[in-house]
Amino acid sequence: MEDFELRQAVLDFKKRYGSSLTFIASCCGISREHLSRWIHSEAYSISMVAKDKIRKFLEGGK
Image 1 (cartoon, rainbow, N blue to C red):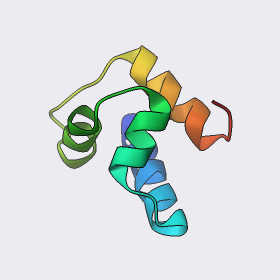
Image 2: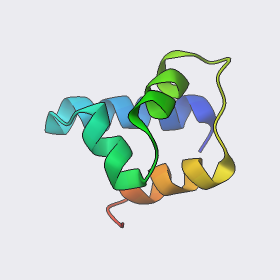
Image 3: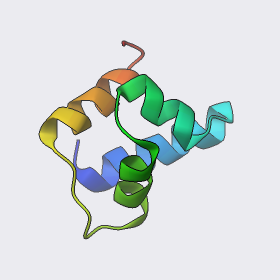
Image 4: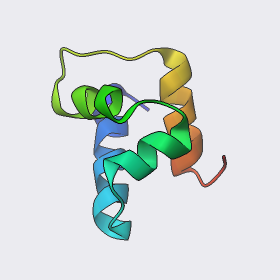
């Protein structure tokens, strides 16, 4: 999954379940600010480890 697709998947999850970015970030073990900046700015990057945590969360596993 590319960065754009992963960003969109997070936004879709947020919209579908009414979740906040704070909830998603805490479940993934990353800061809310870090997640928010990454979602809203293509120039901001996060580590592969953080991306893997987000992917795992979106797939339903913790």
